[in-house]
Amino acid sequence: MAASRGFEPIYLGANTPFEDISDAATESGSALILLSIARECTPAEQESLLAGFGLLSRNHQVWVGIPENHQLTASNVQATVFHQYDELDRALLSYKSV
Image 1 (cartoon, rainbow, N blue to C red):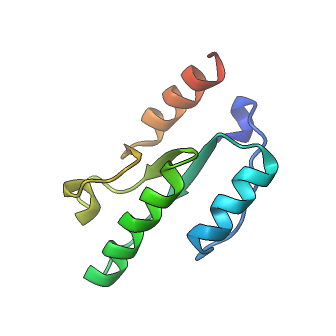
Image 2: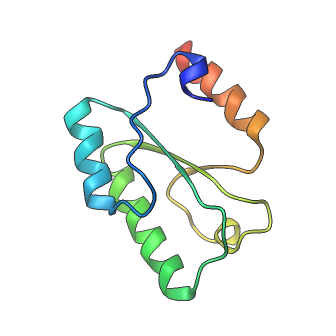
């Protein structure tokens, strides 16, 4: 979706450590990091994700796609959260025009 809106995504793959994501974004000059979480998480995974979002958001804008009923929705996520593809699409169009 990002590529179709004029972005040049760099796919790092599933389960990439947050430090590696941050390094890749910095080295490539990326200002925006897009992440997706599709499954429910254990409490330990949830804690790790929240810490990771905090790490990434220090130097980058972080957008996360998660289902509406996901437990992270009720958490203090340091990222812009999207629940629907059309929300993300509108945000990408808006971001690209800035």
